Image (cartoon, rainbow, N blue to C red):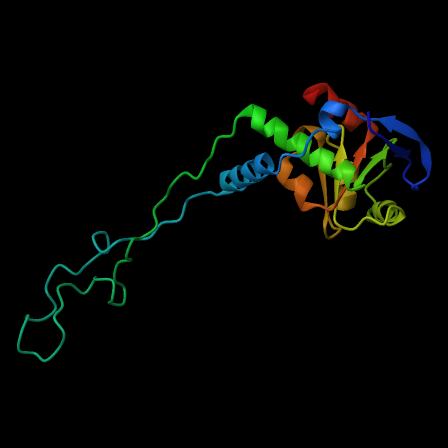
Length: 206
């Protein structure tokens, strides 16, 4: 089992924690990670884009001028694509971009992402992360203690004080452990996670 340090908010080592091999020491599957991230980003797309084709644009029922003899190019409708206020060629229409990913692949991807954080020494486990009140300055001090800039903070439960303390810090995001996902694990360089959140991940994925 991989063993990493357990720290307090001041970045002082207070012990060690053993991590589950089935989650934090698996073979990193980059193909699974890629497919899950592509699906996750596709599922975020609204797909509400829409434009009108020449058949849907108002007007243009009459031929603008006769076919021959005017010296101008022949035209059939003032709502053809080359005209101002004309229709759009191959106009985009509302569609569903959703992609489904098997649960097993999703599990492989998230354990691979967590393992890569451990291998790169970018995972920091905190004994606890409790703030008496929302204080951005206090959260900045925690991040500076670990020299963490682009950081994902994962808590065991939704923690309003931690969320409000970090929401105005550029490059930092806070997630409860049940919302952890592959894209955010890859997007942020460092992962700061509480000991309780690690235990919950092991309960679900082990």
